[in-house]
Length: 358
Ligand code: NAP
Ligand code: G4F
Figure: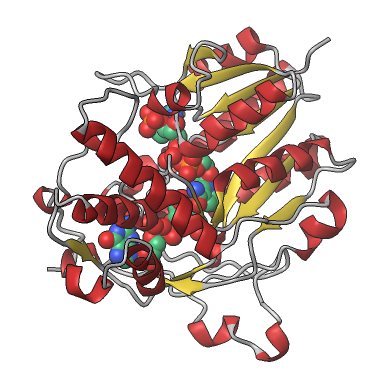
């Protein structure tokens, strides 16, 4: 009989790619979405799987809806990907971020425990939990990196604090109730269906628009920040492998390479033969009250036990993202209609909050 999976946050980047992967593996896939005034299924449509995923309304703020989703889907595996996942927004909405990305995980674990504790559970943990570690730390001699499954957490955002709570809660349920509760500590992973407010997609979208003469400049915050950027479709494969592993464990998923935001912008503009310095301005508005300065992950445990490794490297990732955004904007100039987020996104310049540095 086909395995059944329930994915929370199926409308997000990872949820959509994971649904696609599991459908290809023959799973029956259930996915939760939250009720919005305008439905947000563009990623599922973009991947051509909108009619294949069994959609259920559920909200991470509402345990009864999570319990109902478990009852209806009757899953073998639950992938908990739903979260308020934008770090900057967590400074503006710290309480709801704590509820959705932290307490919501405890609600889901309780819903599983009371329904059927044999259901396997995956929690979307994050490298953001490591916090401010200093650029020097990831540039150790002999190429060794610090950030692995044993590294300490020192969160620097309400989002990261909520995720640390979720991380420990997942471990507690694993040990206290003998549940198969595993988690991936995933480093940043990007794609052409990444949300537009995240820096990589903000850059690829702007490069496409500037290249086609639709926009004139790109405004960024802390371009010195360093990240370990991978390709999202490969990272959802790692999630699935964790769930098939003989024991529930925690795994870092990363590339072990790092680049600054400035380097991402430079590579993206370069790919369209443009000089990033000519088109990019610094805007204090996009600096955070505190920022995670540098991340670089050691994925050797996942490599050894899950036989997982990243194939798409930084340069290829930049190319994939810019090429797709150029294609989309060219299509729109040619009058074509297709599922896509950018036309609905307000110019960030019109969004003002007090947590932004003025
Ligand atoms: P994403 O694109 O922002 O997707 C988040 C999903 O959560 C969306 O489907 C969103 O629904 C849903 N959601 C938000 N609030 C909700 C609520 N109150 N109730 C129910 N659903 C809600 O994030 P992602 O990049 O796919 O990331 C997936 C998970 O991995 C998240 O937990 C994130 O924190 C974590 N993570 C991501 C990365 C990364 O680099 N991408 C790295 C480490 C960990 P809407 O579509 O309606 O907004
Ligand atoms: O793209 P970002 O918003 O991603 P961030 O904060 O690293 O978080 C993402 O990765 C985490 C894993 O480590 C996930 F858990 C989380 O859910 C999310 O997917 O920002 C990356 C860096 C930051 O240092 C930010 O300050 O880019 C810097 N940055 C510079 N200018 C900017 C901008 N970020 C955004 N979003 N917009 C800017 O204009």
